[in-house]
Length: 355
Image (cartoon, rainbow, N blue to C red; front, side, top):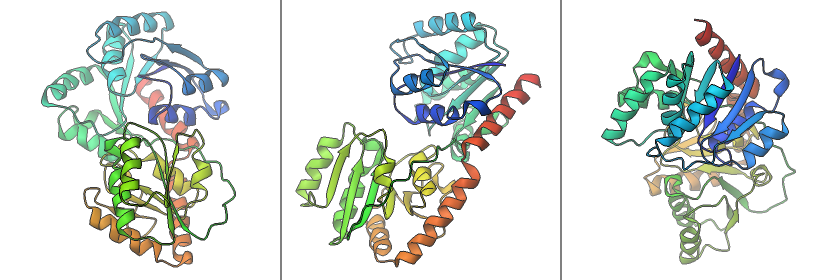
């Protein structure tokens, strides 16, 4: 089968990371895959090409209101003649599924990569668009449940397929007398890094250090807050890196404080490295982080709770943290390997297309 996987962008991001994990072992793939982006390309585009995959970058303004994108995607589909079109992310779902339906594609699959914050109007729009799809994949049970709850899809149309997680590269742990805490992700309001910084300052961590890996629109504000709280000597902003594992490898604790996460891939990556995780109890995270067993959870709107959890964890014996990290590794190794994802997604394609 020829399968077109269409998304909004092919640069950096969660969907791009899924594609890169999926294709890191091309010898395991049974079908012919073509990748495309409505908007611009970049890092993921280059890596996919290096791995021998056909990639198409349409370089269009990708907002949903740009209805002309439907025609552009339609032309691409008619040229490629795929058996399956699998779209992912809001703009690609909207334009791609309509185009695939108009082009007469037999099997159409959409994928919701997060918890959508749709207005009532947007819900009505996607409710109609999703009728063109044979199935809608949610990257967690939480995502599927949300789509059903807001009535964008019936339960029978939803399918849960967890993201693949590439094994992060383990680097030697640098010697440090401090308790090392690491956050990896975008510096945007939804990631709630301000609450993390305030909780870290409130915990009065004399022998702890926080590394914030990533970049975004909130960086200047967060650096100013760090200085205002007189924590600049204990908080380091690294900026963006394509290899966050070199910072993760030094961590005694990984924290993901987001207000919303469809899956929580950064937490899963830390768990693959046997690093204990402290995460907000939102989206798909509680589906693999179990409180007090292989990690800890907190309410992202409750700074006091995060402060308390941080203080408690930093005081724990190293052997306790080691055990939690090992249990986390066991959990993600059973659920999120690239091999398991390939088996799940290719079986799903085969079943739908030949049903």
